[in-house]
Structure formats: structure tokens, C-alpha cells
Image 1 (cartoon, one colour):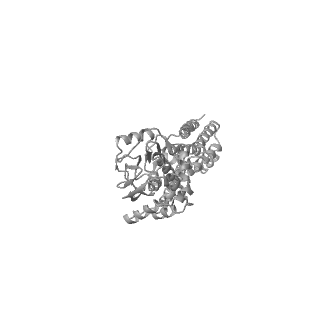
Image 2 (tube, rainbow over the protein chains, first blue to last red; image 1 turned 30 degrees about the vertical axis):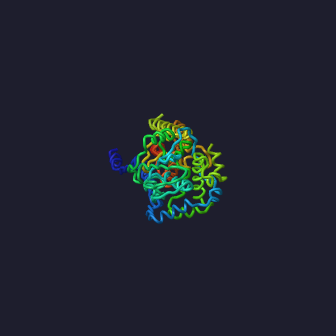
Image 3 (cartoon, chains in turn brown, cyan; image 1 turned 90 degrees about the vertical axis):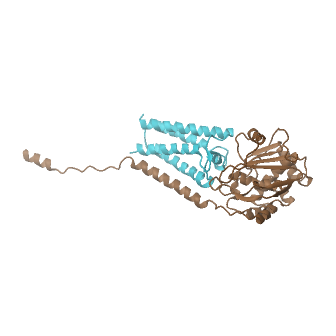
Length: 279
Length: 131
């Protein structure tokens, strides 16, 4: 009896099996997700276009001259193109500028990629009614959506026209530092027609207003100003359909405030058609 | 019902609330209350072409309502592999949406991120419950 007891007591004790701690599986999931998200940021960093060097004054003038000198047949061929019609009729006291002509008011900012896109269309449209000088190239913010979208700034630029006045307010530079401030009356228009404060904001003589971009800034990403200007010469290019189409919409709104002057611009079939669409 | 199940149902209900909020704002054409500075920009994400299910005008947030709704129902049932499988489906969708935000749009929507975190939380609960 006692011998049996001794044998039992000497039986080797089973070592407890070590279990993986409970926190390991959830922690592994979190680490794996973090790695995937980090990989997305790396991909984004690699695919973000670098900031192009601003063009010299002469080259800028040449680019502006090309995009403001597009042939009339191209405007007619493109019509609205792929532009999104964001222009809405508004009922306000006629907005006139410093010289008493109907005013086109633009409020935007240099960092804003949507403003960057819309400036191309505005310059093309306004170029049909007058002349810009002092436009400079710039890009939208490097850290915002659609980074480094090539564009121009209205800061320091002047515009002369026999038909309209143009007033531009760039509220911030591309690093979001404050730049220009809208007047009290301009701020009122912005609050009235664009309560969300989205930019770019455009008021055409207080007859039409819009906020936002009529095409995606994505269309310009990674391109140089010269390349975009070249694309605009081709009425079938994606850029021409978006930018010239947007310019036609703005042109139609302006023509409604200038009583269809000048006829060379406003009486074209494309503009007449878009005027009807604007209402 | 265990505390883990109750927590999962609570998280699912929070996800439903966020998804309904984003869906209602989409149809109302209103931008959600959200920071809009630098890469954090709800408007940029929610107004991008990816904010709707491809080929339709249905906002992606409707998928969130469906997913979180199904999740709440599944967690009310006895625990099994189905909760883990459903959470895995949710994670794959979330990673795709985060890819769109970071790589394609280049902006992050805080409301969407809140919903994504809830999906990951449900996955972690599902992983824990299988041990």
C-alpha cells in the first residue's frame, strides 16, 4: 500500500501549456491596420505632384495671351462641355464696379484648389470682355486636397474692359495666411448667396451667383501652365471641355448683365444657348 | 446577453446614428459640421465622386446604415464565427474607403473616420470573443 503511494507521488507533473495572452490577437489586428494606413500615406506622398516653379513674367504673359485668345469657333464647339452649371439667378440690386459698369465679383483664396481650377475659366471668360495685366502663376496649397494645382493669382493683377468691372478678393495666400479682406458690402453678398462660405464665390452683377468649382481640380494636377494652355487649344481635350465649358457658362452670365454686349461674343450660338439655360 | 454583446450592439447603434446623419445631410445638400483645414476636410470627401455608390446617386453612408444595422442584429444572436466574418467584411470596406480618402481624394473626413473606428472596434470585439 505504501509502495503504491510512493509510485503515484513520483509521477512526473505535466507542465502547464503556455497560452498566448488575450491581448495579442486584437493588438496584431490594430498593428496590421496601422501599417496598411501608413502604406496609403506613403503612396499618397509618392503620387503628390511636386510644386512647380512659378513662371517668369514674360512666360506668364505668353500663357495668358494663349488662353485669352482662343478662337470663337472653339467656344461654340465646346458649349457647356463637361462643366457643372452651378450658376444660379439671384435677385439683388444691380452690382456695379468702380467705373459704373456691371461688376463681376470673385472671392477666393490662393490655397484653395477649387479656386485654382475656377481661375482658369474666369480668365478665359473675362479675356473675351477685356484685358488682364499683372497676373502671376501660383499653385494651390501643398497640404490640401488636389495639392499644388497650377493656377494664377488675381492678387496684384489689373483688369480693364469696356463692358464690365472685375473685382477679385484673395482672402489668404497658399499657406493660408490672411491676404485681402472683402468690403462690408461684399461680405454681405457672400453671406446672402453663399451662407456656407464656400469658395470660390462669384457674383455676376448681382444677377447670377455661384460658389464652388464647375470642374474638378484633378484635371490640372501635375500639369504645367504651358501644358494646360496647349490642351486648351484642342477643343476635344478633357481640359478644354471643362475649362472652356466653364468659361462659356460665366460668359453667358456676364452677357446677361451687359445686355449682350459685345455682340461678337454674346450673340454666338453657344452663349445664346447657355443664356437660355441660366434663366 | 453578455457585456461584450451589449457593447457591440451599442457600438453598432452609434454607427447607425453617424451613417444616418451623413445620409440625411447628403440628401439635404448640407455639409456636416467638421473642421476644414489642410488634410482634414469633410466637404472635400463628401462632395467627391466617391461619396456615392458607383453608378448611382446613393450615398456611401447608406451602406454604413445597412452594415451597422446587420451588425447589431448579428451581435444580438449567440456568439459565433458570423460576427467575425461580418466584421472582416466591414474592415475590408473601411480599408478601401480610407484608401480613397488618403490616396485618391487627399483629404480625411472626421465623421467618416468616426464610423471607421467603430467598425474596427467591432472587429476587435469579434476577435476577442473568439478566444
